[in-house]
Image 1: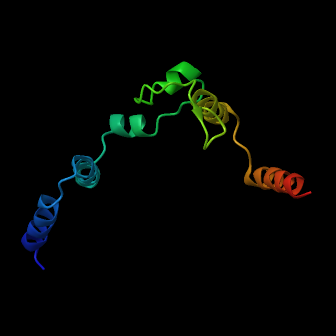
Image 2: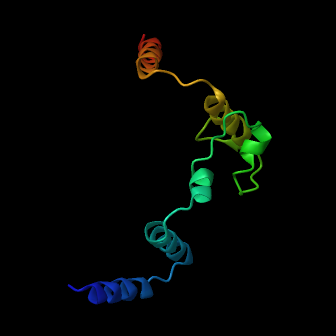
Image 3: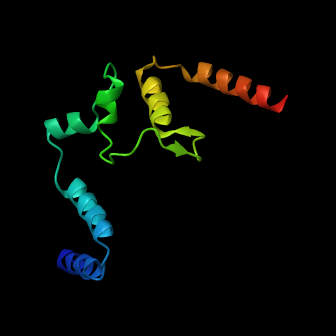
Amino acid sequence: MTVKEMQLDVIRTVLFVDDEELLQTIQGLIKGVVEPLTEDDKEEKYHNTFGMSFEEWNQQFLDNADLKEFVPEYGTTLGEFRQKIWEAEQSEEMPIENLMTYLNQQINELEG
């Protein structure tokens, strides 16, 4: 198959997609592959949140969700769940050996 034939094949495939969200995803994937990241884009993509306040960190979620809403899947409110994630991101990194020891201790406590 030639490059032109492949291009036409991709176009024909995309023309049959009617879902706007799916098309946006496809467009993002294509742009991500075709357009190389600039240094500013790379810095934004891999932004370090260490030292950022919870309020600043929480602004990355553009959902305007009610942080007081209880989320059964998490067994806590959305705000408390996000707070735990933020705290984990702010903590020091743990060597994998220490993590495995900690996880094994937690498993042992749950089992016995």
